[in-house]
Image 1 (cartoon, one colour):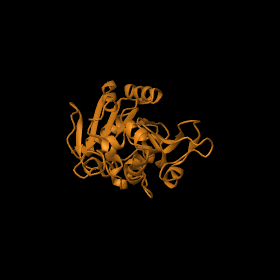
Image 2 (cartoon, one colour):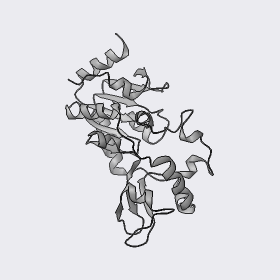
Image 3 (cartoon, one colour):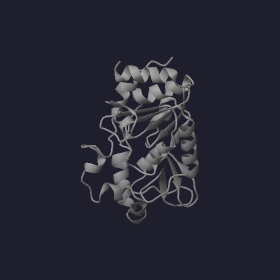
Image 4 (cartoon, one colour):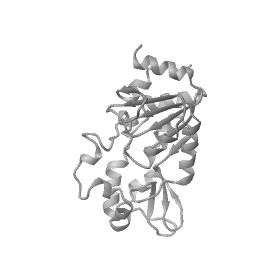
Length: 239
């Protein structure tokens, strides 16, 4: 029996699957990941990428922040791939109880997933730092160099967790509950090196742990499948 056949048996036997995904889930949609050889963190820019996406950079170098943010994180024409659709299919079938994602692209919801815990926020939501008014992705993309609130003139900020900021407590608690109650946890497209998000998998005490990733991941006892997430999950039949 090969690894995909083993995964099929696990999915068939599972009633409460939790899906924990990272940047590798969206690379098949055309988005770059962060830490691979050709990822965003390997590119040269005015400041190191970690600083460009930090709270300090947003406050002190707002124009530079938005220049980088628009170029690297706001990508037009990006659509869900086979991984997003398969995860949504599992939820619709009643086998998957929730998606915990480190991604900020909103592709899980675009594919039809409802129970999504966005640990790092979403580029689709933006708020005025002064009055809290909501703005969509298009507003931020088109109002350059810095998007200012049309109601009060305050700076509009993406609802994205930047370096130096805390994760949202309600989102974390929902993610913990989802993982803790799962009988199967599928980890996909992540190196599990970004904390505190990666630490959430320690709450899993279910029966089956599965990892799908292009590179090896430190997850003792897991069924590890080396490969692209979409290609792998698309081989699974939901029944």
